[in-house]
Image 1 (cartoon, helix red, strand yellow):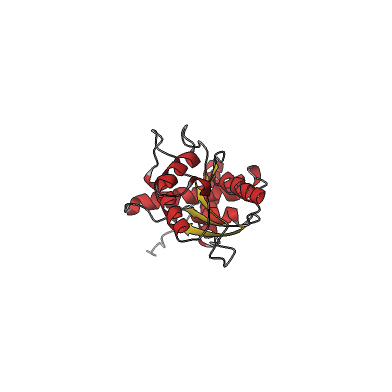
Image 2 (cartoon, rainbow, N blue to C red):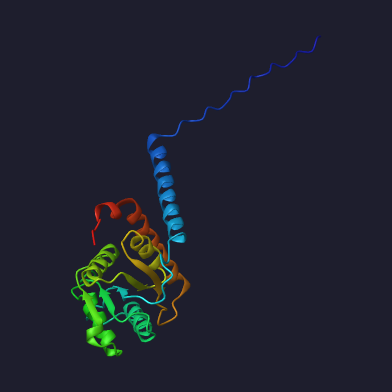
Length: 220
């Protein structure tokens, strides 16, 4: 008897199920967030640290940071003031502008910093207080406004190292000769804490680039 050739069953191609709109939207949102954070990180890496070669300035601007719940300077705030005192003593500038309102609690940051500066030997006549600013944009704008009123045109800007890239981006849009100067921390912090500070600053930089610089625009 002739051998029967077995019938071949045609291979069926599996059909891929199309992605649901919710999944596509989620993927697009994740991609947008990643792109935004990457943009902020690159902007921080390329942020200017100065727009002048000056080594002596009309003023030292100390960017605010909240006091503790009892009105005492926190280590972060004290580190900024202490470095400003050192720079004043080195002759970098003849005066300090301490900027910061009651942003984190009921205590005005600039006034708390002024007490710390005086306790470290800075005479009261060399201290100017800017007590209204609620964020870095206003720190920069109100300080430059105060300087214009006195006819001053240059400043060294002091803050924490993780804060200065965003501050540099902001100051770069203002009519001022400026240079940033990082305040060393008073105590060694863990790598995890430093990473958290940097992550927060990346988020704040992203907010500034996409939103705050338009909605919180300030004319000095």
